Length: 273
Image 1 (cartoon, rainbow, N blue to C red):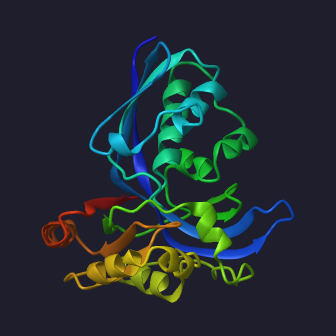
Image 2 (tube, one colour):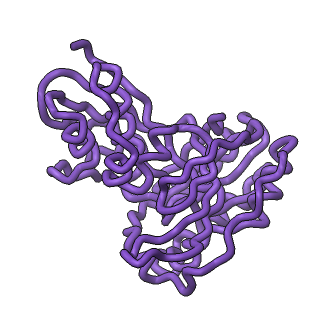
């Protein structure tokens, strides 16, 4: 078997509504999800084990519950994974789920069938959407994936160096019965996308900000950048995104933000269609 490499793009919740909770405790979501051309990369080859390299490697413990290793086991084992870790850990942009989905895609190219939908969801609620790897309206606990068309746009992602535990954020929610998103209108350009996003919300942001007040600082810093059309927290935090109309403006904002906050993780990228 040859080595297969796969990109694991950052997942960005442009908006995220919590609309209920099932009897088993899982929350029901309604989220507009996109991906950025910023992310990790996995290489899958015959062997066993997991090697983590890259700028965020030190923050990622390698244990049996690592999502890459769980994805390998779900595909029958027999391979070694090398993970180039670029995305911050536990940061609301689906790093672990994106890595697991990349392992699944790479292993499938090596001749193994992909696990069924239930098995993919059992790996993690964000694994199915990361396996799809394109803009969708995600519903249920993560199993409902309706493809959507979004206009060309650029994103600046920023994290203050904080890992936020998703279960703690959900426990801190004030309400779990919010209204779902309206139907996504036909969006003619990034300005209309920004207007739609601004009218929605991330229902987890108030709870996450109460646990990690620096999130508010990150969102404010993004909002203050010239050309930022809207800024919001992604997922359960602490990463926030700013939406921009062109790559040059986004890259300039990212450089300015990194210079002002050298301790933050900052990246600019094109939103994938």
